[in-house]
Image (cartoon, rainbow, N blue to C red; front, top):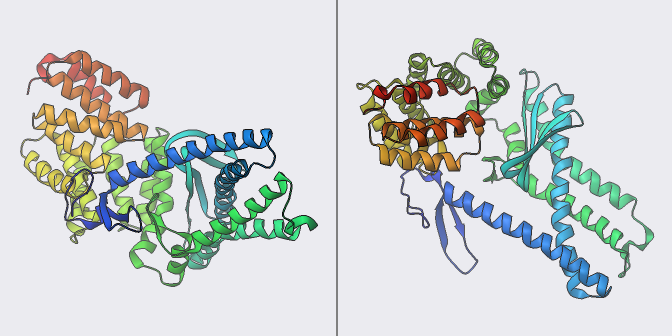
Length: 434
């Protein structure tokens, strides 16, 4: 397949999204990167336009209380506002019921794009992103007891909260509900009711959420009755994986490894846990052990698909870090194949750039590493890209630019395990030659 916008090609169909520009045109094909960029651009433009429109509408109504255009613009602003506000109780519904049934609630995420605010509310950690479109609650079961039943109620809780809010508003409606000319606050109450109903219905439809890459509430409810064996295994291991990720993000690598080992003891064949074990080996510089783990998982995952490409990427990245001339052909082969299938993913782009760096192809490496650095939203990943860019510039005879990216890496993630390696290379000119 081929992206109609950037021209990227791949035989891996899951790396593309087909959509219509309008009802009068045929479908076009976009890679994930172009689709995500288009989605963010559209949502950003829409949110700004609605906000400005709401202000203009309010001004028009202030000048003329019977302005039709003013009412319309304020109406659009309130609809958008209440849809956003309805997301918060929806996600809280998931989180509260998850905690009631003994599940672990890690974080409630609202919106897409760059994270702009983190705070704690009602005993839960919130993360707000720049574009308030959609939401997701990161939760995981801590045991297998009544798994399908608990999952059903946890998933159903989100839409149920929206229906409950709408029912309360309807029950306590004023007598003036059906009259044409109502005060603005009562119109707003009506719109809040409608927003909650729309959100509940939309989430109960069985589809895959393209923004977050997970099934809708409706799709997950169906999976409670028709469980997938592999997915159930991954769900059971998610508790330990997410705990390990949390410790790693806090810089507690020892704690992360402890959680990972506890999970592997319980679920020794869990792919996500074993993959996390390999990632933690990378974090400590134990590249040999990491490569063994990733190779074993790759040999196990023989079916072409997303998992196999991700594992190929992991092996290629580890081979590159080892800088063993005998492993670079393997790194080159796997990174080319992964990049060919998932060239829109920042991690895949970064690995390809890293392999080219270790091969001495510095201009191409800098180009891809810069692209990955700019595309990544996670500080840890950006810090790794910055470290490799520092190495690339140092090896190309520009140590000053290398020091600039080294400082960026330190600011983003002061505990990045690559920093000491980069510092050594920058301070020892003999190591820069390729």
